[in-house]
Length: 303
Ligand SMILES: Cc1cc2nc3c(=O)[nH]c(=O)nc-3n(C[C@H](O)[C@H](O)[C@H](O)COP(=O)(O)O)c2cc1C
Image 1 (cartoon, protein in one colour):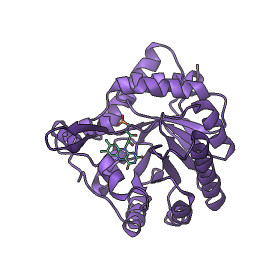
Image 2: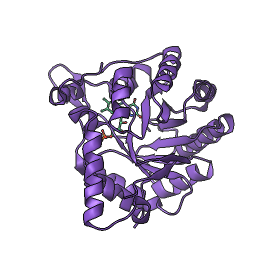
Image 3: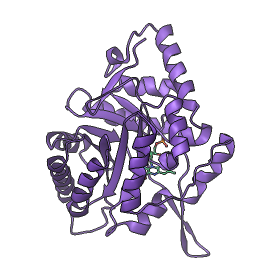
Image 4: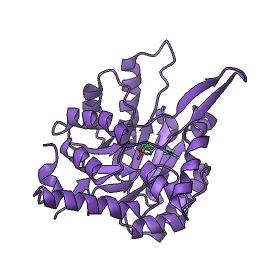
């Protein structure tokens, strides 16, 4: 049974990738993920300071996800490890020294300036690829959707001009004309599109007059929006398609592949069950393919 795939031009034994988040924070965990068969690891994002700093830190390091670790037995990474740029590069070098699978760094921001020079340093530190996590709150009344899209395309163009390692763009599902924008990113040279960012929820504590943020872990129902996004662009762009959000089981990976994904990222499922879940999902994919007589994922892709 052939599970091999090509993602961002990199040959991978199978599509199961560890997505951006806290799982790569500790070397011991990174080694365990490799041992459990991860085909690639994405580090948590380094945030562009001027715009987001604290906000984005809160956005992803929200309280509630850590509760899930109870189910994960011995697995308990430090949830709140925001790294400065120097530490980030140092940690990247250490991960590269610790494992043989490809390691991607991740940058989060909205303006070209800060990213471009740092992208170069990330390349020099040995990253096999870079995921650009583009995010825009879209609350500025003077900036149109076209302006936002133009800015992102500029960032991708600039970053691609600066570095040689593959660049994936992690997108939010909130673009007005998603397929059109995806095509523009593709034309700008993005090697992959990662669909879609999953947002934390913000509620209001009406007595304390405070915003209460929570980042709950996903389940397979989160996948459906991503399947739709992948299917909209599958076979129509050069860039690889990665799916992030709601990948928990072998069947989720099968569906993602049928909708066109070259790679599937997991975060919630691994936080919930620990690294060994990669083996379970892989076995589920193989069993399903055998039962339904699919010799390879590449024949299934985009069907
Ligand atoms: C605790 C936690 C931290 C995360 N940190 C990042 C991050 O730094 N950068 C990023 O692009 N996505 C981050 N994410 C989002 C994940 O990469 C992923 O896109 C999202 O959780 C959906 O995938 P899942 O359903 O497999 O969890 C984080 C998610 C969680 C749960």
